Length: 417
Figure 1 (tube, rainbow, N blue to C red):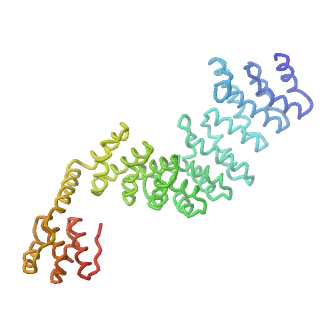
Figure 2 (cartoon, one colour):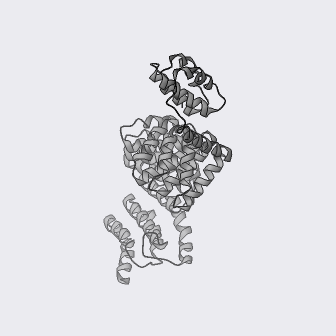
């Protein structure tokens, strides 16, 4: 094995370009780390042939990842990793200025693997993102996404006007993968990429369902002004697979109170099989706050019995955000509604119509509800004008009963939610 390694090191100096390339690639295949490997490959970055330099960069990064135990079985000692980092980083930074664009791009990708935040890396990625070569744009779009989403060492320059503008350009690329990477990058940036909103709204009309969904997620990441994404997110929360439902629930939570129009979907989400979906839907209802309707409050109260502690905690916080008084009022209205079902609604005589008409104006909503239904059952056309007034009643159940009685009297009536 040692003989093979020494032979490959010597072969890096061979006069044949192809043999140097083969040796560079083979050095990354060893299952044991040699201290000479990185210096020998770094020296190869000065090779006159770009193909050799590309092979060297590829093997350098494979060896580096293996040294760190990422996807490999070679684990170097900490001091070896520290000693290798400086020369490797410097060599790749120098390669950013190579005359060959593929070498520059490979060096930039390598530096991203090293969590570099150097502006030179960003500049190379911008150049590649605007290249006429689709493969270069694709690599750049992927690297920009990784740079935007990597919390360990984010490439903060992507948040600049130049960075956002480049992503906007990539959003209209003819290649679907490039557009997808750009969408993920925009979603990772969140509100700072708000300038991309018009482009995202256009993609919401894309014929590709996956692209529409990614655009909706990106738009929702801005936290406001994402109403156009609601239909797609709502639909995916109901019909998407497990991962898409989780992503949709996360996006809706990001939108907060702006998700109010899809409250009914959020209520359904409280019964989802995936606990994170249930928890996120509960959190979103809490962000909508006191403006949620009674249905949402009752659904949250039911969800207090969820088997998962995380879901119960989200429900508890949501109910707290809605407010104890609002929750209590919703519970009382539910009790009153149930009580109305026991009121005598039939058996009234025509001579009792005047008394029922006066009850339509009673302060007690239970009395108004009973009278509205009873007058409809009696066919009391003289109650039409008063029943029409009840369509604006503060009590939703009263409004519903008034509308139903008006319909039985031949009057078209609708109830506002």
